[in-house]
Image (cartoon, rainbow, N blue to C red; front, top):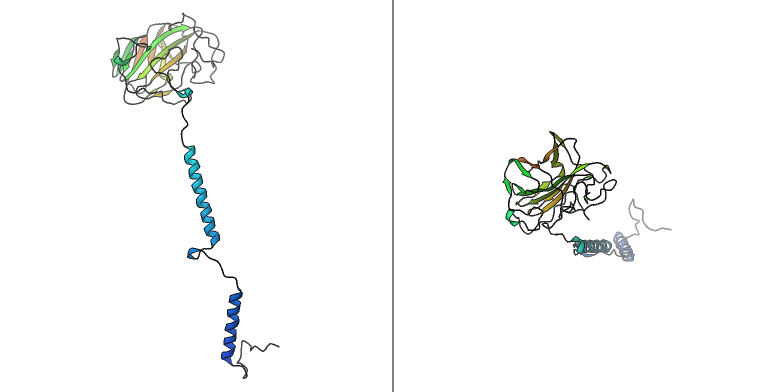
Length: 289
């Protein structure tokens, strides 16, 4: 039988309220002692949360360490060394421009060079240079011209049935005829200014009896390049042979307020007229090697 009083109503006469309350408090105290105390860390935070925070911090530190190790540039190998920009053979059509990217800047020299700084073995080594800051400029094949600070020289312009194919054509997927007659030009460009300039093969046109034709993208290259100050580039431009007499080659870059007209005919050094490096079917093999 339960002798405890009910929650409602008064205590029995034989019960002392104070003794009952004291007994109840003692029972509550014993219950609290039997309960397992709750463990907490500094600030009352449970230890499991502190451990999780420490693990997260360690993972972040390790990630940052590996990221910093991966950002270090590897040492340049022999294959990354750039060739001299003044000793380029005009037959290879690549110059010092990088062949890996369409818009990669060509290798810059230590400083910008003017007409008097041209090396003796440069493709446009000559004492006579035509300089112009704007307008229409005329020159002959093999005569260097300064279009502002940029030196341009069409070193050769001739007809051929076996054109030289560039290492990197403007459009590698373009279909080019394996036979026929073409007009091919080698152009040397050197940036002697303080600002970078854009050299695009499509800025050249071949004019014959008042008609202008654009270069064949499969036999013209390399693609457009940005020349840093002091950098140079050799271009191969190939056009379909016109029906009439050739009037000249016209260059109209966006950075020059005018145009350059080049007239005459000159076969590249080491090649006979009407022959050159064989252009394979599809125009994919590099010439000048």
